[in-house]
Amino acid sequence: NFICVSGLHALFTKDLVNEMDRRFYLNMDEALRIKLKVNRDFEKRGRSEEFTLSEIARRRDDAKSYVYPQVSNADVIFTLSPSTPNLLDEDLEKIKLNLQVQLNRGVFYDDLRRSLIAICGLIVNINHIDNAGGVTIDIQGEVEGEDILLASRMLFPRLDELIDFETGFRDGML
Image (cartoon, rainbow, N blue to C red; front, side, top):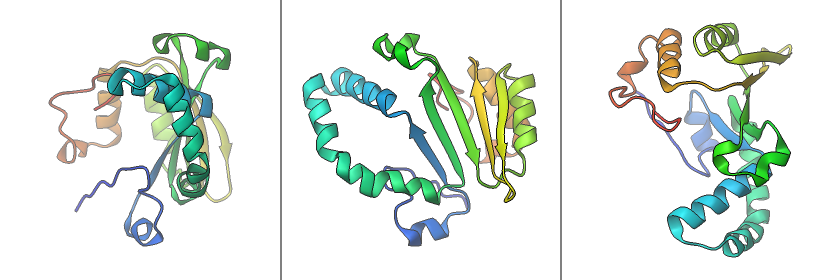
């Protein structure tokens, strides 16, 4: 059986976390997160920047108490950050991002590293390997959806049994 649980509080309750085989957490540079949220709320919800910023401030304590601590329950942590923080004033299209991946059980990290370099043409640096098998990887560069699809199929040959690849990757999403 394959069940995917997604959401802001997906890793909050211990009972649910204990039922999961793999747990993923998406972390983001705070300034980048705010910029993306303000942009989304303006474009899709018609909200002003001031309104969105006040809502973020109002919910800050709840995020510190309930959202951010969930990172400790994750096996894989993806962290997005701007490659040049001073470019956060630019249009979203111009902001280049860095991706850091922390694998708490990084058994297959070398296969991942090789695929990202050879197939996707990315810059991949192994920053840290700990005694418990954890690995921290920094990834930089631009990649095409077709390359991600090819790398995914090479790393996980039966992935198409779980995911419909017919539509392919669009806007960085499957």
